[in-house]
Length: 320
Image (cartoon, rainbow, N blue to C red; front, side, top):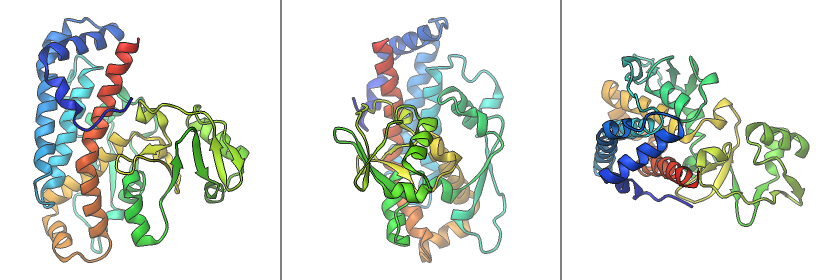
């Protein structure tokens, strides 16, 4: 069951929102009375987030990153209310939870820029409570290039500029099919690849070599996209893929990847205005193309990811 981009408006029914939250809290053994208190903020977070994202679609790129980032922030707050009825219990979870370099160096390039994850704040709260991936993120630094390579919709743009794809397409018709070129790129045998995939996700532990392909014969319905990692889903091409460059970020959920990129872009557009506008106006180098492509991707992808997360939660509650 797939959840489409326009599903979020379905949560704007007070009756449904209260019932949904009550069921969610019952599953985690929390008092269902919180559903009455949280119904309105839950709907308002989603409404405010959608207003940001809807306006971003009709806004110039000069200010679009700020609208996209705060649209994502508001939607994450709504998601957190479904699993943390006391959110925000302390002021420590209200900060963004990420820092970037305050002053850009000479010869600055966006792809080499980094953000650092802080111990407290919205980012770590979401990572811990929504995705349970706290253990290796706290205090980490990561470059924009590493993060952008984890966005499957960016594959075509990187291929256009560099001549080589950054991801391996994984077809999912009656099974999963990968090019065996992934073995050379990862420097792995088929056995080691199976071990690697099992370590990352036990659902994908039985790949077999067949000609110039690797085949996984068991079809897995992708209801919850983050549970398919390290495979990522492209809403644009409707394909799954693996990255050509492995890193610890290969299994970090998409919403967290976009949070970090959009945080940095929003900071740059607000506080590094000269660099940002010169990049958009003069269009020198490939970064202009990559940045504008990413902004176009994020404008569509954020709603998809939030819809999938909340829709999967509804599905899980009804199935339990």
